[in-house]
Image 1 (cartoon, one colour):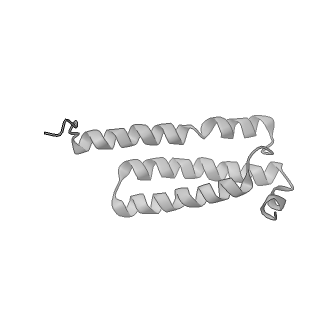
Image 2 (cartoon, rainbow, N blue to C red):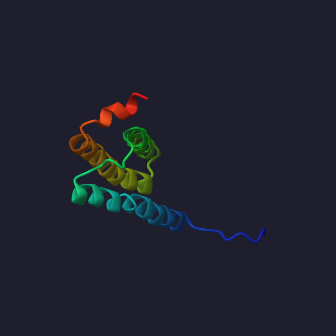
Length: 101
């Protein structure tokens, strides 16, 4: 015995769901702030485009891997992230200029 705790597959999946919840819910305050202020000036368009692309790819991975925590978290995170992107483009007329550095 190496002294490491052995986790059952069900426990590992539960850890995945808790981690998914934490990282997904982390975007809710940002989205609420953008909605409340009607401004997304402090949100980087490039960062959220890249992030949303990564979340989409994680979702595809999760679907093919059959990982419920990855599918659940990335489905919700993609909706939140794309919502922030849409609001960024709606509220900040010059947002696209950020990509032309």
